Amino acid sequence: MSNTVNTFRMAAALTMLAAGTMLHAQTGEQYYINGVYNPTLADVKKIDLQPQPYDSIIPAKAIDYKLLNVTGQVPVHVDSIEAAKLNIQLAQEKLYKGFVKAGFGLYTTPLVEAYYDQTRSRENGYGLHYKHMSSNGSVGDRGPSDYSTNHLDAYYNAYLRKHAVEGRVIYDRKRVSYYGYPTTDSLENLILRSPKAPEDFLKQIYNDIGFAVRVKSLYSDSTKLAHDAGLEVHNFTNLTGSRELNVKLDADLAMEQGTETYGGQVLIDNNAYRGERGDSLVELRQNGTLVGLSPFVSTTNGKYLVKVGAGIFIDALGKTTFHFYPQAHLQYRLFDDILVPYVGVDGKRMRNSFQSLANENPFLNGAPLLANSSLMYDLYGGLRGSLGHDIGFDVRISQSQIKDRPLFIGQEYQFDSIRHGDQFLAVYDKVDQLDIGGELRYSHDEHIDIHGGLHLFSYGTDLQAEAWNLPTYTIDLGGTYDFQDKLLLKIEARFVGMRKATLPVPQGWNDLSIAPTAVDAKGYVDLYLGLEYRYTKRFSVFLDVSNLSASKYERWYNYSAQRALVLGGATYAF
Image (cartoon, rainbow, N blue to C red):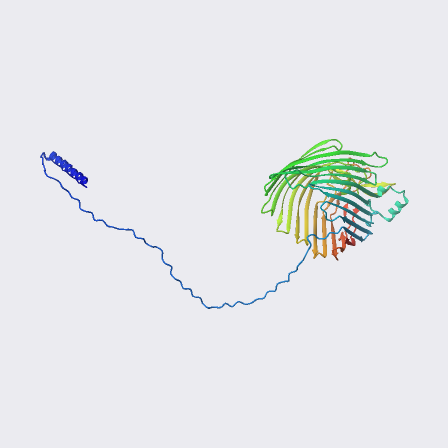
C-alpha cells in the first residue's frame, strides 16, 4: 500500500512541476510551493454475491383420462371356406418302359409306332424307336401316288463321372411315286400295252443307314474347356443306283474366364457321291471335304452381351476354295428381360448333299448335281421379350444373300414315247432374300399353349428368272389345350403364299439351253386337327384329320396333295 502512495505522490509532484514550468514559460514568473502532499483513497464498497443452484425442470402435471361408456355394434358375417383337396404325388412319377401307337385311316393308311426305353438310371440308358406309315395315295387325275415311310433307331447312353457318351444307330426307308402328270383312262391303257418302264421312272426309294457317337463334358467348373464332340456317318442310296457316303466330325468348345467366354466350332465334313444317270450316261462322281473353324469371344455383364467371331472354311468339292465370313451378335436386356433388342451378322459355308436335297424335295431326279452353298451374309436385327409370365414374342428383319442356293425345276420323263411322272432338277443360283417376320407364343399353366408366326419374303436372283418354288409369305398358327389331363386338343394351320414355278422342261434339258416357262403356283392352306382322349394314364384313343379343308393344293408343281386324311387309333403304355 505504501508503494502505491509513494508512486502517487511522485506523479502529483511531477505534474505540478510541469504545470509550473509551463506557466512560467508563458508569464515569465516563477512560483514555489512548499509542503507535503498527502492523498487518501476511499474504501470501496463491494457486493458479496454467491452462485445459487436453479432447477429448470417443470414438474409433470397429473392428467386425468375419462372414457365414454359406448358399445360398438359389429354385424356378424359367416363366410364359407372351400374344402381343401389334398393331392399326394410321388417325388418321381412312374415311368413305363414301352409305348405303342397304332391307327388306320382313309386311303388304306396304316400307322404303327413303338418306343421302348430303360427308364431311369444313374449309370446308363438305352432305347428303341420304330415308326411305319403308308398309304395308297388316291390322288385323283394323277398317276399312282402310293407312298410309305419306315424309321428305326436305337440308342445307348453311358453317364461317366465327367462325361456323357451317346451312341445311336439309324435306319430310314422312304418310298414315293412319281405321279406328277395328268392321267386319263386312255393313257393308262396305253401304258399297260407299252413295254414296262424302269421302276425309277415310276417311283423312288431312299435308304439311309447310319450311326452316330457323341461325347459331352459335364464339368461343374466353367473355367474348364467344355466340349461336345461327335462323329456321324450316313450311307444314303436310292432305287436309281445313286449312293452317297457322308462322314462328319464336329465339336463345340467353350471356356469362361470371368465375364468373358472363349469358344468355337470345328467341322470336318467328307462327302463321297456317285450319281447313277442311266446305262447310256457316264456315272457322276463328286467327292470333297469341307473343313470349318468358327472361333468366337463373348462378354457380358448380365445386361448386355457382345459376341464376335468369324467363320473360316476350306471347301474341296471340285476345286479347293477358301471362304471367310464375319460373325457378330449384340443384345441388351431392358427392364429385367422384358425387352431385349438385338442386332447381328452371320455367314457360313453349307453342305448340299444328295440326302439333304432328297429330304427337301423327295420327287428329285435320280442323280442330281451337287454344289455347296455360301451364306455370304445375314444382317439381322430384332426385338424379343415377354408381356407378363405367359406371353413371349420375337420380331425380326433380316437381309441375306446365299450363293449357289438350290432351286428346283420340273422335268418331263418319257419312256417309249409315253410321259411318266415328272421329276425335279436341282439348279443353283445366287439368291438375295429379305425376311420380315415375327413369332408370338402364349402358354398358361401347362394346359394352354398357343403360338403363331408370320414371315414376308422378297427375293432377287442372278441367273434364274425367279426364285423357283419359294413362297412370298408363310403364316403358321397352332394351339394345344389340355382339359384336366383327359382331353387333348391340337390345332395347326399353315398358310403359304403364291410361288413362282416352271412348266416341266423336256427330258434332257439343261440350264444352258432355253429358259423354262414361269407359271404362278397358287398359295394354299393346310389345316390339321387332333383329338386325344386319355381313358387312363396308360390307355388313350385319338383322331387326326390332315388337310381339313380338303383342298388339292400343290407344294410342287403337278403334285397335288391328298384330300382330307382321317386317321384314328389308340395308344397304350406298358
